Image (cartoon, rainbow, N blue to C red; front, top):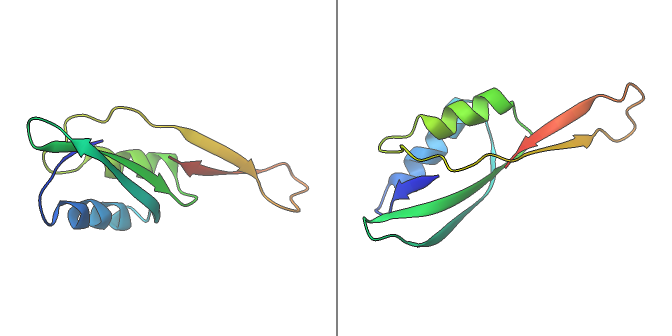
Length: 88
């Protein structure tokens, strides 16, 4: 996602994910862009894909959600072959 490189923006983004009940595992900022926006790579803990996408898309000034990568993993000791999902 692209975000303005100024104080308070990361807090606003984190709050939006929290409001959607999505816990952040890591956030990485890539180099500054010419228009003052930077690329953010956000990794969540296991979460609803719908909630993660909604939180990412509904950021003030965010009009560029470049990509979403879904990672699925089997639960340990799961005999029903259910999967949990982690959204990157």
